[in-house]
Length: 290
Image 1 (cartoon, helix red, strand yellow):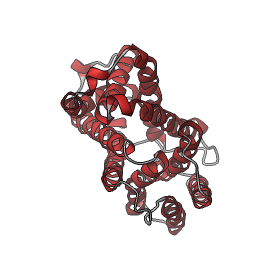
Image 2 (cartoon, rainbow, N blue to C red):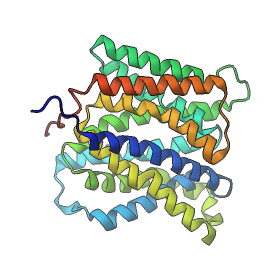
Image 3 (cartoon, rainbow, N blue to C red):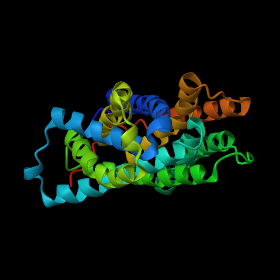
C-alpha cells in the first residue's frame, strides 16, 4: 500500500458533488413559487431516476436479500432528506438552510472521532456554523429552521447507509435503485399539494437542470467518494457545504453575506482543509465487503 499517495479523484468527486448540489438548490428556489417544495423535490428525484435508469440499467431481478436490505433504507432516507430539506429551503435562505442541515453530519463526526486533532476541526466547523446561524434573528422562520435540522439528521443517516450500500452494490446501481424508493416518500406529498397542475413547458429545462445538478451527478459522485473515503473524513469534507451554499446563494439568488458570515466561511474552509490533510493516511482505504 502506498501511504503517501493521496487518491485525488475521490476527493474531487466529493467536492464536485457539493458544488453541484448548491447550484441545483438555487435552481430549485426558482421553481418553488409555482410548484412548491414537495413537487420540486419529486421532479428532482423522478427525473434523476429516469436518467440513471437509462444509463445504469440496474439488474433488479438479480439483487440479493443483503443488497435489498441495504438499498431500501438508503432510498427511503434519501427521499425524506430531500423532501424535508426543500421544505426548509422554501422558507429560509440557502446559506442558513445548509448551515443548519450540516449539524447532522457534524454530530456524526463527533460520535465517530477517536483522535484529539479531529475534534479541533469539528470545533472550527462548529464555530463557523454558529457564526452563520442567526440565532438572534427573530425574523427567521422557525418551521423552516426545524425542517433544516431534521434534514440534517437524515443527511447523517444517508452517509451511514450510503457507506453500507456502497459495500454491496456499485455506485450507479445503488443511486438508481435508491432514487426509485425515494419517490415512494415524495410522491404522496406532491399529489396532495396540488402543485403538479402548475407545471408547464417553460419549466422543463430548469427541471432537467435541477435533476442533473441536485441528484444524478452529485449522488453518483458521492457514492464513488464513499467507496474510498472513511465516513468521518467524508463528513468533515462536507463541512464545506455551508460555505459553498452561502456563496451560491450570493451569486445566483442575491443573498448577500455579512462580515460575520464571511468569517464563518473562512472557519469552515480551514476545518475542511485541516480534516483532509489530517486524514490523508485513511483516504485511500476501500470500504470493507459485506
